Image (cartoon, rainbow over all chains, first blue to last red):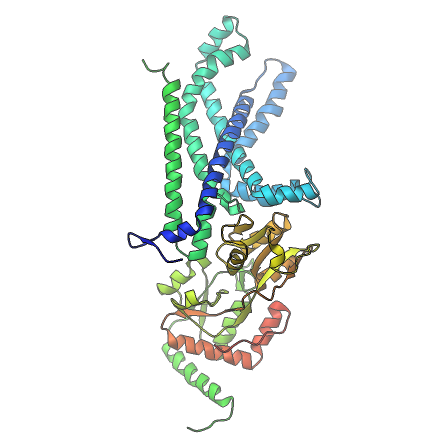
Length: 255
Length: 256
């Protein structure tokens, strides 16, 4: 292919040559981000609640402490306290081969394992690592959001005869959600960018496309500038969506 | 011109060069090598850099009277370090190719490189063609990547690219791919560590050579290194080092 130069230095032709990889990569990045935000939020909600779990009387109180609060705290501590990159490599090259392995997989073995590993191996480990990591951060957002609602609100709701569940659902969570939206949006943007780390295990997303082109041509401006613009566009879109949500759910706060 | 007996002329040249460099060399030559590439160059737990490349350059230095300082330089930055003068030469499993020849000067080949396919022991793969439709792991931008891209299409989803050779072998060992393609020396070394893997050669793979790299235009150093390389090949030192690292007889290398 003839070199096509934009502005005298940008080799547009090498991007065009690999365009398929970039488009597929874009779809993969968006897909992975959406799935991980949803799963991470669900996990974060559960873990956040688990960290607040408590009971009034003897056996249940100890049970809450050792079987619910402690594991949740250790989980959050590990996933916030170690680099995401390390978690991804650990998941893909150590944990997954142990669980899914044609020879002696603990979870799945045989030909199914081989098929899963080959077709979705990088996807599974990437999504798992990102979800677990996001879940840890999001659980802290949920916990902080719930704890930020004045105790008086809960006390008032309970003295009016609402159950704990009703209090949470009708009084605490709606208010907490408003306060959680900005940090949740932040987290979603961080997750979108962090998904680039999964290229290390061979998942064909945006950063993988750029790495492939850089490796083939030893040129770095073109591929990395291209994906930088793509990531920026995506985060701008995400930031806009979060702003709209904040506006919508923030109405009650602004008078 | 006076006809000298065979073997005397290179020896004379060596003598002249050695004496001239001994004077000119006021500081040791700085050798760059990326020590993450066993068996060519790697670090021992004692932080010592060893390997085939290291033995070769040390043997050459001994023959030509050069003093060396070997510096562990990441492969991604090794050429830049040569250009800005931090390094005098590179010996780091660098494949001689036309693209690199435009920017750097190479000595004569010191190693014959071929691509090698690693597969599981029970695999029926016999050649590159057998890998069509199968998942293949390669190191990004390597010759293996080139070979796979040409055979299966550069944007093929069946090509899985990783950063280093250990990772492609780990991916293969974990059944993430059907095969891994890489440089023979490194692949053979890694496969030997894994009991359920084997290697397959394909005669259609391009023949390549590793060369020592010097800055473009540094003809003096290049000549010394070439003379030294010829000398260690002539006296059997090369064959001894080759056998030490690859447990095989060395192939005959072209002189240029």
